[in-house]
Length: 118
Image (tube, rainbow, N blue to C red):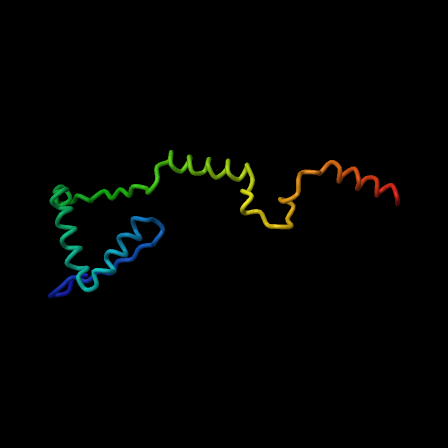
């Protein structure tokens, strides 16, 4: 918004990416000097992209993701493989079924024998 003697803007964005957190933290640390930094940054953007100053031209804002698709797929693959392998011994809870060897078949046989008592 423009007033006779200055411009006034309010900016807000989420903290869902490292870039947004970094930018927000940086601006927060500037205190009352945020406005000067924004003017400097926009001026440098104009220098790098003079076409945005042409009448009727709208800038194309492209946000690059923090991770590539390949990085996300590798991370998901790693997590799935880790989960399929089971929890590491250091994370098993004492007294849980994870501590016991896999003896499902003898337990099943014993359960069936106990059913014959009825």
